[in-house]
Amino acid sequence: MKPRILLVDDNEDFLDSTKDVLEDEGFQVVTASSGEEAIRKVEKQAFDVVLMDIKMPGLNGVESLIELKKRSPGIRVIMCTAYIVNGLIRQALEEGAYAVLNKPFEMDVLMRTIESSQHDVKSGLILLADHDKELCTRLGGVLGSAGHHVRIAHDGREAMRLAEGQSFDIMLLEMGLPFVNGLELHRLVSTRQPAMLATIIMDSALDVDASVQQELKKQHGLISLTKPLDETQLLDLVGSICAAKRL
Image 1 (tube, rainbow, N blue to C red):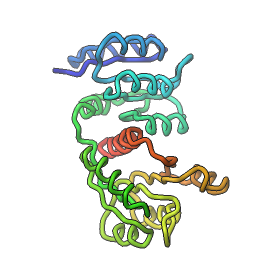
Image 2 (cartoon, one colour):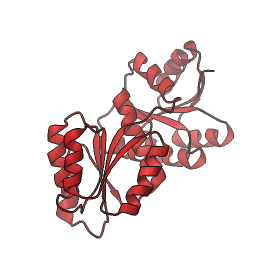
Image 3 (cartoon, rainbow, N blue to C red):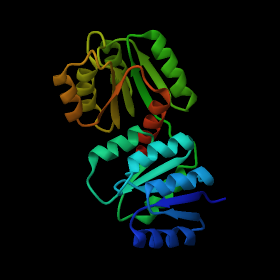
């Protein structure tokens, strides 16, 4: 059975035209013209996929995504945008968006994204490096149970050796790794593995000074998460990054 889709956009012409295309492909489609309306409909009906604009008056797409995930944690939310809004795109992925697509859609890409969102294949090869062995064991188990393949290191030199032997999709690194810190490790490995999707730096807000925080924001492909980690948020983020690889 085709997924049941909630289509959310404040542009009525876009809603009508996209609804027609999706229904021609056999999808069941319900529309909402705002984030607030989308939340009300998810509270009353079950949907498999939400296709939602990022920039909307009232609640924007990211704010709506957060509320939708509270009400239906397993729902797949595909964001779309006609604007260059890198900050919102990054936040959407961090909050668990399945993918972000550009408007106007390439319809074959949209169809593939909707179909792939229904299959649990968002797996990747992850390098996890932290001096805390107990944390590594716990996060490795959480990521592994979601279908990801995880290699673990407890210091920067060990992580470098692993990166020399394998190409990783994602690195999940402690900022204060012994011998080679997380930021320097990202610089070294990303130059050798340009196809790597992202590096997630784990840090304590108390341990990172303002200059390092600014560098984290500027570095391409870097995402910063504050310890203690929200494991659900981490799984959603990693899954979204791996989904981008398929597209």
